[in-house]
Image (cartoon, rainbow, N blue to C red; front, top):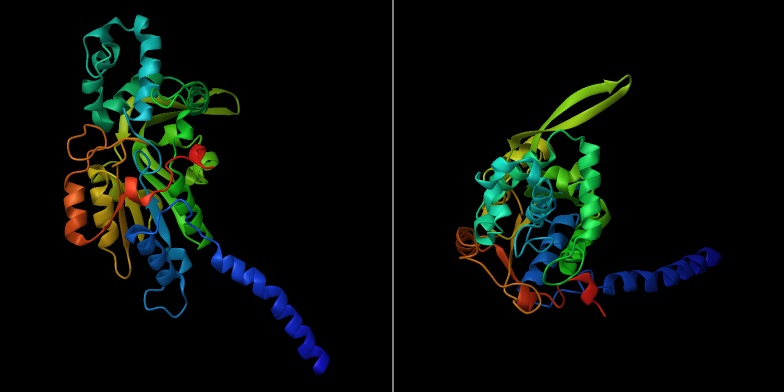
Length: 332
């Protein structure tokens, strides 16, 4: 009996420093100690603690994130719009009609103000027209090739460098607490899927986005292909986001983050569920380290959703005051 007690004591002593170090580790080191950070930590603690009145079973721990402006930068225009614009210019000589047709004319004229107002539908029209007739595999490789070569006009870095370090930490923290993390974005689903797992740790099957039609073909025996067509199938923005969540995920999220009016309905849908819920918005307030914009911006406008967040006491992250760093390359 004494030997057994002695061994149990040794085991407890060996485990104690590990347990203490885990408890002391900061899961959100790039977040300043403010109300937003505390709200996140409090929510996760409440819904994952057995015996808590707010406990959420693991299979119901669904977290949905917008992409543009929530997980990575979206200024001076949506990155997919820049990708599509580059492709459009490369093909313009074969399509003289584009010189007089919108949304193509805005791109070829270099009219950034007009491009910014195209919205997800105009963007997808450009993507559909410039990539129709190619396989989904060829399109995915075109996205990866572009991301490897293109550079942001202000920061002169690859676009995938412009992901938000605090949000990467939040994704990791949620997954460590057995949440399943999804992207629910107005951006093209096939534009995001080739790289989200490498950059965010979110696999392609957990990406919900806008989509164009594809067609199944068998150009050679036993070699099927999916061919992209020049038609839009689904716009996963605004009221389309709850529809996309219902169609592709099948569970209402308990945690949702966005940054613009296009995310309002996703947050409303999340809030309408029973039990504890977390709704968050990223407010772009840092013109020095990133960009500052909200109500009057043609890209990522935050107006009605902001008012709703204030009224309903959702969490609004102030980028300038709540985040110690913006991008991973700023870490020391």
